[in-house]
Length: 188
Image (cartoon, rainbow, N blue to C red; front, side, top):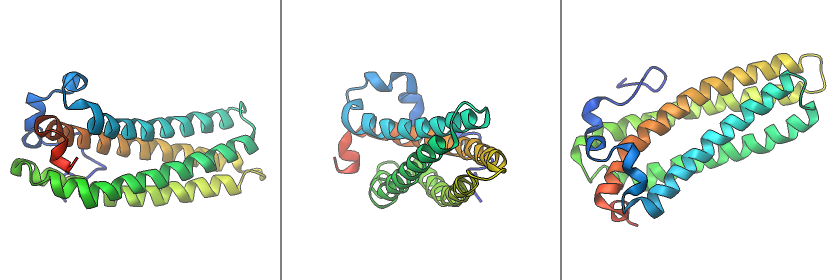
């Protein structure tokens, strides 16, 4: 497989070609940043923050600083929000944005294939997240609740690493195209 999510440390330099002209530290000053790019990065920030909040909450549970029932309610609500929104986000990308963006610069076609494979890989990681969350929630009343919460925390860290890799690579491939071509690059 071409640059799998679980072992990738970044996109190959050949796919980061537009990043040279549109470096990350200048994105917010670009006239095409407001609107679509700002919204897209905001969604990515939301996913990262949800992951951080669930990890912090789980660490508070493990340290005895959060009531198990309070943790269970938050974990259930935040986890459902995270999974549903991430699936929706990826569906829109796969069905609308990626097919349009891949036509904007042939040099990036391989990168969109990598991102598509990431989405499929993340589906498996999200299934593990749901299973680990459910196990932790079901164990709340039992003596094993800290063990299951610890497993959930480990899974959050693993998923967070993979998700951040994907989001960063996606941003570095897509944002420069939209900054260069404007929101019309995706029919906006």
